[in-house]
Image (cartoon, rainbow, N blue to C red; front, side):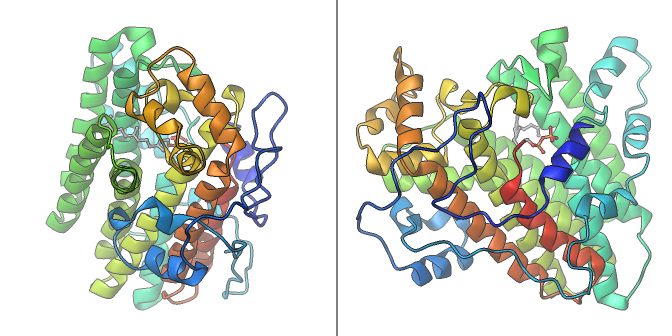
Amino acid sequence: LRWSCWRRRCSWRPALVGSPRPARPGCAGPLGTRAASDTRAQIPYFSLLKILTSASPNMHSISQFHQRTPAMCCCSQTQSGEKYSDPFKLGWRDLKGLYEDIRKELHISTRELKDMSEYYFDGKGKAFRPIIVVLMARACNIHHNNSREMQARQRSVALVAEMIHTATLVHDDVIDDASSRRGKHTVNKVWGEQKAVLAGDLILSAASIALARIGNTAVVSLLAQVIEDLVRGEFLQLGSKENENERFAHYLEKTFKKTASLIANSCKAVSVLGCPDPVVHEIAYQYGKNVGIAFQLIDDVLDFTSCSDQMGKPTSADLKLGIATGPVLFACQQFPEMNAMIMRRFSLPGDVDRARQYVLQSDGVQQTTYLAQQYCHKAVREIRKLRPSTERDALIQLSESVLTRDK
Ligand code: GRG
């Protein structure tokens, strides 16, 4: 039900910077915040776009990202005739039995370990990663030889991606001492931290076995790289940078490693299995990377604009954990007094509330949303290089829905 609610809300509507999504009742929204019109040293819009869509995401300073002209809508006309193919409906055709299949991969005899490991494979997540992966697989297969077949090995990549993702959620909740996720208690709260760490390890090891069974060393390397990136991304999040520009580069690098690497490398993995052309592998990777970064940027926005009921977990969580995400970093440009708070990781009494107010009075939410739009724009440009197909169009649609999601 939660998944279908999210899916329905994701139908595309243009996200206009300067007109951020309205607050839900009970959620602190950015309405009534200071307009994004103050004059700062900013670079022209088209230079900005060029920067965003060229080099790697970790080379930029925050001033380069500041938007000064109205954002272009990245809603794209698709070309296969089916303008608004529902990506979730389409992707789910290949994912029937996903959670049953994952539970089979876990095949654990000990009752408690089994309950813990299966806890999040209950259909309450959005299955965003497996959906992207199967759509990408079909789009690449069609691009390569007009094949309508989905390979079993490609579907296995979708399973592995969801398993790795779930293992990270379990570990992340231990690190953050989180109490709720997806509207229920976390594994660490139900069974304790020690057992939660082991449950995460077990899911990861089952994912590794399933990955090895795919039998392709290039695919194994891609997904092994993801695991390294996840750990490094999480580690980056534990540190702070004093210099503002370094701080923003640090944030984008963390964003790629924590979230986008899994999507990028899983997309590349299915392209490797479906098509021998390295150009196609790069398109798949770039699409996944850019959608993944946009997904995390919007996640960071939702931490300020959504409410706990909607998200199924507490909001303002990043500030409480001492983490300065996009909305804070942009707000700090308008309110330099936030610097000290960022450096002490919002650790003094009242810091979290004050920082939140600064963010909501600034254009931090709009700027972060705008940045996410640019990454989606780049993703759409990449995927359009593939031969037109319903699945390619669904990927375009999916990248756009990332911007309008509210959970
Ligand atoms: C390699 C097991 C392992 C751990 C590495 C803990 C850790 C180190 C990394 C954490 C990475 C992490 C939790 C990133 C957050 C990514 C993110 C945006 C999660 C939320 O994804 P959704 O919204 O969640 O798709 P649902 O609940 O829908 O699946």
